Length: 470
Image (tube, rainbow, N blue to C red; front, side):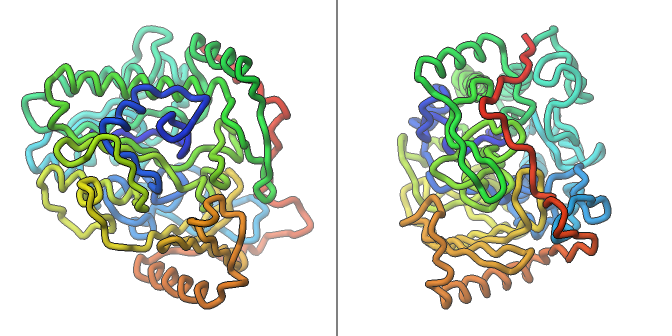
């Protein structure tokens, strides 16, 4: 069973140090399995990250390098930026290898429930190897009907009783699938829309965290990430309530595995598609001490939680510091199922690490030739051991960080380590060439006398909770 949360930050769970959010079910999963402390998404935004999870391929290789369905393409670009973003694929090809197709061919029943966001109708889960699809469409959030509450206005999820919560409904459908297929091999890919905007939560949970915020004496604190305000504290009551609804949904699935008598032979993985949103939208969370958030190639945009419970392989309560990637989920699932991949994966199975061994050293890469909507600019990056190199595509500027000594990426060492920068830059460029990466081009309409297209309105000094639907 794979669970992929949406926009959940690296430190949003109690198991990862959050003192404001309450996540008892996921904390229990962490105690029962392994907790990775240097897990990375393959991209700083959702669609490319989700494509990489399914296929085990770099976003630059699949061509899906930005959010699908938004007007962030060169032809539609109207923002005043120095570059035009690179073109990118708008759907996951049917021919792309993915674990659902491979497992179904191997006799597994396959279920998808939640957010898909990997192409238009005809490229939805039921067209990509899943027997059933609950709620997966082209949309990146719950934007129809009552949004997080029924009526959903979702063509792949019939409405429930008025006020029913989306995460609860998706978990109920996935749990029913588990109960009905407990006697045969199955795959459940549960991808709740939480905690993506719009930020909405059940009224009782919102009130709970408003009271907790007052009790703890918390108030929002802000920093600056270049031209953007960045949230530095976890004290958003609605966001915290959404984290708890996510946790509750995961708990329902874990309880169903227990009730079905198959928890001791079921692989469970939990992660997020990118870092938490801290520099725009509703500024829901803080990734402190990591820098920035979703849409940036700093650690706050790339680092995610990763919990794995693999009976017979993991030692309960282990913490693993080896850097790993969302790319590794594809080969890990196939490894656990005993199914051979149909094509080479860019990831590697986590079995060795989970069993207490050491994995071969490798370099992790990122390529994001876009601006997005949260302040980041086109950039590429790599992590090799303790070293992190960023290369900004607008001007070729590089930054170098020692993540062991400086996990917050505050001290740029590029000027002090020119040889290392040159070596890592050559490795990055060779990888880009090998994956067919696309690049931005100069924007002929850029006007330096006008405000930058990377700016956004600053958040209010006191963020008010958004309108709640009972």
